[in-house]
Length: 203
Ligand SMILES: [Zn+2]
Image (cartoon, rainbow, N blue to C red; front, side, top):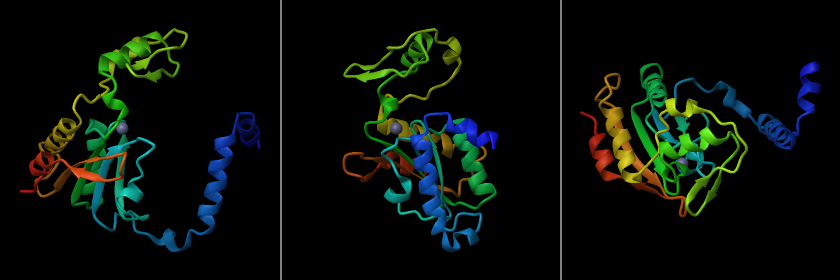
C-alpha cells in the first residue's frame, strides 16, 4: 500500500501509460508463456539503444526468437561481450549481428566532450549544430574521466572494430558467424559493412 501511495506522488504520466499498455499486452499474451528459454532462431543482435531503432520490427523478431543486447552505440563493450558469451554458451546462439546506425548520438561527441559536459553539471545537455552544449547548474563530477564512453568517430569503422573485437575475443568460438551492419534511420534499411562481415566469418 505504501509503495503505491509513494509512487503516485511522482509525475506519472509515462508510468501510467506503460502500465496501461502492459495491461493490454498481458490480456492477449496467449501461449507465449510456454516459450522456451533459449532463442528459437539461434541468433543475437547487438545494437544501439536509440529510440528510433526497433530490432523486433527491423529484423522481424517475435517473442522467443532472438537475443537483443542494447547499449549506447551498440558497442562491443565488456558487458556486451558478457551477454554474447552467455548467449552462445548457455543459450545456444550461432549467429550474431552487430548493428550500429546513422545519426547516432555517439557520433556527435568525443569521450573528452562527455567528460567535459559531466564535469560541468549533471543536467541534460543541449544538442546544437556544433554538438552537445552544457546548460545546467553545477556541480558536475570528475567520475566521467574514469568511464570509457566508446564514442564513435567513424561509423563504418566502429562496426569493423566491434566485429573484430568480438571475433578475436578468447571466449568467443570461431564457429560463430558475426555480421556487421549500419541501420539507416532515414529509410529503415540495414546496410551491410562488408569488411566487418568478412572479419566475422566463421572458421
Ligand atoms: Zn545510437
